[in-house]
Length: 270
Image 1: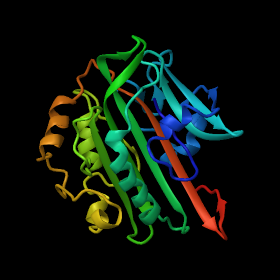
Image 2: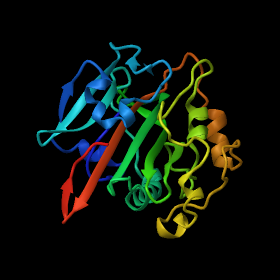
Image 3: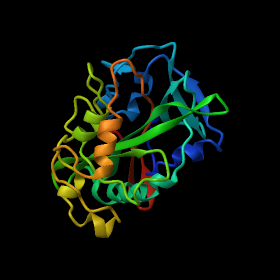
Image 4: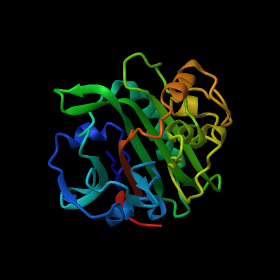
């Protein structure tokens, strides 16, 4: 499942919030019909699902513009076969705190506005379902990209982990290159933010080493996109490498931007 949203920065648990509020679903013909939520109007490249900006199997994957209080909030690419993913948020609580803090403090664009683009997704499990209907994802992942006026650079980082209660207290901050290597298939390349300046081989922690104190982020395990060396990361890379005949994604994006001026929010587009 895929979601994109503009507005105040929210934690990844937005999925659960949406499940209890009256959100209206507007089925559209293409993801581009809600491209205001996409970085440079370009969706991720997902092998076998989203390629060259188009949906490979439109009968299975349905783009939906989600509306709340008469305003479009995000866009979802819904997997009708696996249905809505259900997962526990506890594994992601500390990572959400870290990421939200980074976006609030360091994602300030050239217009002095806080702006960030986020992609969050799930790998469906092969045989774990709720009441034999709803697929429960086996792995969750998240990535963000934003421009930093202070550093005059684009910043990006990624996190991922198994959907169980055996994960460490903190998920290590990784590069986009590491995430893309994990999510690519044998024959096709996964791209989180295609055709953009989002850095593949660096994380935000390399520009702001004080993150572990300011944002309660875990210390960096590595500072390059070399193969992960920690047990947890190695486990993800080896066991979650997708094969060419597997369609492992329903995913949701939510993109947000906001600007404060005299305590009022101004919406804008770059």
